[in-house]
Image 1 (cartoon, one colour):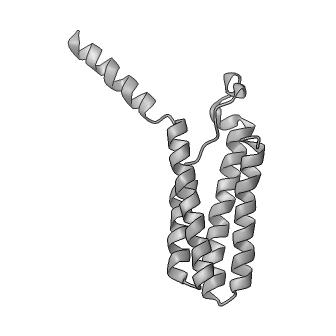
Image 2: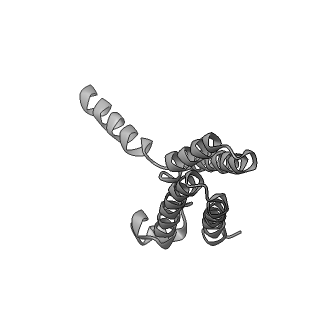
Length: 134
């Protein structure tokens, strides 16, 4: 009986341990903010190492971002909602833009790298305005 009770507790802990919380979202957003600041600092100092570190921060954190839970999840699975699909699409685009920034900067095209950074920032703002309803 004790083994069954412990098994149920362990199983429920494992199931709910993977839930993406508001605290997780805040942490991810703070990490993305830091990464974007590092990329910007790399442009200001013309320093590739800052840009690479910032891009790695984008890649490490953007992939795990999920939108806030809204009422539509009562009727649909989480990964079928507009907010979830939109968030995942925008973060995937951010990762592509992040790779392009490094490539452009390494090729000596700082202006194009900066334009790509601006596109990536627009991806951030697009998600914030649509999903977070700014």
